[in-house]
Every structure is written in structure tokens, then in C-alpha cells.
Image 1 (spheres, helix red, strand yellow):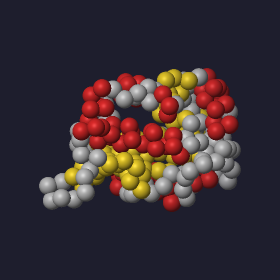
Image 2: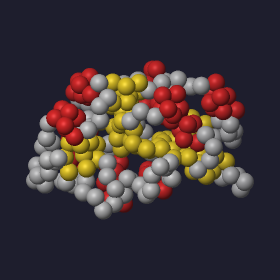
Image 3: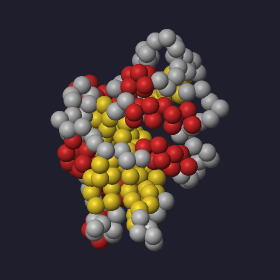
Length: 242
């Protein structure tokens, strides 16, 4: 299989549709994870996914799993948890801790993690540039403080949020973070959330599959539109009493 190698001096990516038709979505290998290249990739529906010891692999999957924020589904059990459990959800309070926890989270059927140290550093740079955001779920601890129980992170370009990974150290924490993050992102002006791959977990939240051509068309429109309200650094929801 002839896999294109990226020119380190160029941000150009090979034809995505050929990659989907001929290589199961593997667009290219090589290059680097500098901020400009990552942004150039995401607006075309391309993302990096590889393991330690491998070259950087760039993918564009079809069909694409997406979630429209206004179609978010909250099941009865989770809705009860959201009403009754003590927690707080924040945005951008501790991005490095969230991505590190996602990297450390065990994945069924996987050994190691694709969120390498190189990837973590690259996405922290994206965060510092205002293009990557984290959502943290905090539970009260026995000492009267708060502990990081779960969360998620992703990349934001225009009115699109590209979800990357989530973790939970305690029961329901990642679900709570996601259930609170989606309405908040919608308030900020996000119109489409890229979930990349289909999972039963995401399907329960209302995700759906979209042909890549339609996904790319949506990106062309939404990625150039500014958010009316930036994603801040704040508590976005809390059931904790003071």
C-alpha cells in the first residue's frame, strides 16, 4: 500500500477521498504536530492517531460520527443523576490534568495509549492558543474540597467542536461532564460536535453517522464562522451548595 508522506515544509494534505476509498481513511504519515498543521488538518476532517514508536498517522474516517447539540439525548437514569448528585463542571480549569488523565485511562482491548507525550504537548499548545478546551467534573471529597472525578477535551475551530477523549475516575463523572459541556458549547455558538468514531456510549447521547462528504461540507461552512461567545474558563454548572 502506497502511503503518502507529508512534506515537513508544507501544510498540504493529500486527497482525503482517495484515502477513504483506498486506505480506509489513512490520509498520510509523517509531518509534525505543530499548531498550524493541526488546525489545517482538522478543518479538512483529518486528525492524528498513532501510538508510541509509530510515525504520525493522519486519518479521515467515513462515515463520520457527529452530534448536533440540539439533539443531545439525556437518558432517564443520567437525568436523575444530574439532578441529585453533588458535583460541579468547569471549562478550561485544568486542561493539562484532563489530557493526562485521558492518556492514563485504560481502554478495553487496547494496550497503551494513542495520547502520547508528544500529543499531550501539542494539544496543550493548542489550548494555550485558544483552540482546545477541557471540561472537568469535580466531586466533593471527605475533607470538604473538590477532586477531579472525570472530564473530556477537544479542539474548537469556528462553530465546530472536535471531541477527542474523555475519562472517569469515579462513577458517571465523564457522562456528567459531557451532558453539561454540550449545552454550554451550544450557548457559545457551537453547531456541530465531531465524535469521530461510532460507539454505543455516544449513540445513547444522540450521535449519528454522517457521510464524509456531508461532514466536509459542514466544516467548510461552520469552521469559518466565529463564536458569538468564547469558551471561557469558568464553572459552567454546579449542584453544590455553599
